[in-house]
Length: 231
Image (cartoon, rainbow, N blue to C red; front, side, top):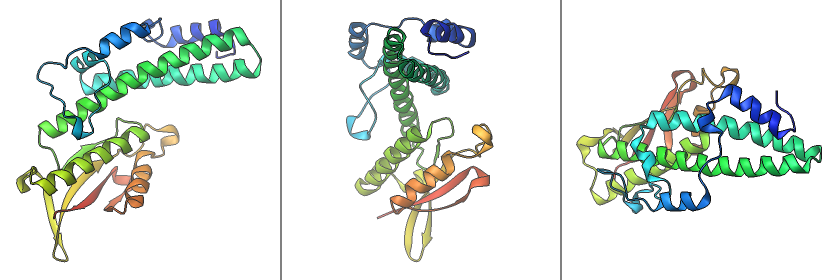
């Protein structure tokens, strides 16, 4: 059970998570050293493509699914320690409060590494496969999903403008004498979300609407189509 006690919360985590995720992690110096590691073999970065580069490159040896699984675990741990930190702060338990704060900050650093690696790997896979007709976001949290979609939209629009994306690499449709690239965005139906209510679909719809991007789709299908002009 969670409480303002660091030791009690740590015991709770040991019962619910592998010790791999909660034991003391790399020191700051080791993290900085890992960030200077050469890029993984066959994984080339282009800083102009919105792909993050400042993270532990050894994580690229993992699959996107493996990375996402670890992100979800660390998100859960982060939530638990942040809640316990707030409880300790409220109870003025300064010793435990300090422990919670240090651990939560460490978890945040680790979480960002895995999130950056999963983003980089997923975008790299999409682009190396010349996949400009669909993007599957349903394994990502809403803020990550919006970031990924925005990156891919910018990449596609730039590719259309420069001619780097050929017409056979995407689906298109002509509407009122204007040619549109159709990008299918898979959000999932939200069946595994809290209360079974979709989070990604309405969040993505709000994002594209705010950007003035045309779209169509229904929440119960777990996907939508967005339309990008082909100049």
